[in-house]
Length: 257
Image 1 (tube, rainbow, N blue to C red):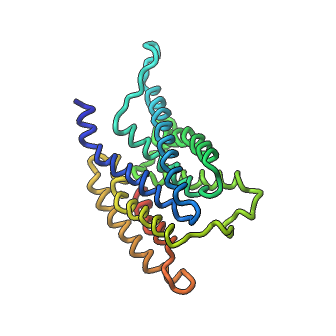
Image 2: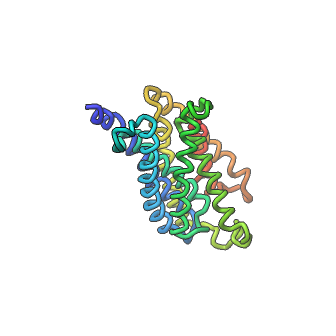
């Protein structure tokens, strides 16, 4: 049947992206020396909450476009596209989490991310549903709707929460890493690096092979550039682990556009 064929074709890709969200982003967030276990645990619960909320909101919005309300309310149709959209919403939330990590508590984080989902969903519809705004945007890898949106939303949230508390900025004593936290964060980077081609290719349909090849080349280039340039940009000529943990993934993000 149609659902079985959809599942057989896309479930492996779904698993790849799930590993990115729950292991890749989870361990990447452990870079703060006093926020390792909490980072993984909050990543877990926040990703699940955001994914379920996004499936409900997007499912209802997509249903409303074609629903015949004279027949009463309908059920939301579950398919791999909706599940993938839920995971992508979780990715948006985890990018925002990376901005506000260490600045907000668990309840504040969940409030910020729950509020984010409907705004993200509306933004998604406005960009891709051309009958509303004829932008004609193509963003299969989410560079615009996932990475840029999540980053700017996180910056806005962090500014709103701590705009009057400058002492909690980047020079705070807790804003530091240890050998162990750098190691676990790098594990997350490696998982993200391995599965980023699947992230970019998931919703590209027949062009998946092109998306995978281009992403592998691009993310390999950003990795080489990071290791070559980092010693020149770091005092003492050493490789900065924060560069390795983040800049190595830049090629995957840019190819997502």
